[in-house]
Image (cartoon, rainbow, N blue to C red):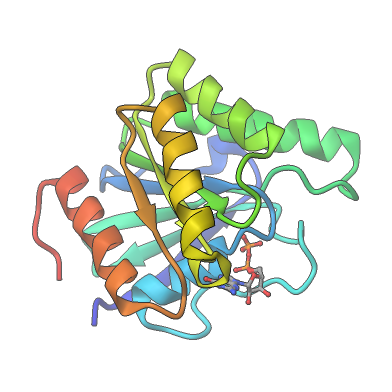
Length: 193
Ligand code: GDP
């Protein structure tokens, strides 16, 4: 198990701690399962609070993974009940972070594999592509997807984003967890586990 602990929560990009350790970022729609994913990777139940109400995580949360890197959980986007100002704030914080954080080594766009393509996910990926920020896709909640639908989703994503790595994940699968760790280690060019 990799020792991981909560490090900081920031509401604005300039508040980000000035620390040279590398970053791995997770971005995705609210309720896509990012908190559960952080917990799964750390093998801890309560590291990231799992929000019952989508949109409650309105900050950027930093987790310290064994002193080797920070896992950055960016605020979930697209929660309808969030006020317009907050929504704009979110996207600004997300885009400002992704385009300027020097420590960023890899961005994972987490999507809900049951909802193949939301306009917001597509907008996020297009923005990343236009800004030449490399990313991988985590197809989350795969336990809820029939094999046929999974195949269709791979095809769709493969056509739209031919050079983007896709990793399936479900909190119920240890195999998927290892694949994400593999991608993190490749991005950081170190062996952590
Ligand atoms: P966040 O808003 O992106 O941080 O999402 P959460 O981690 O709070 O999860 C939102 C909801 O999705 C919760 O009810 C979780 O139990 C559920 N969830 C998260 N990951 C999975 C998964 O892999 N499979 C299934 N079936 N449900 C999941």
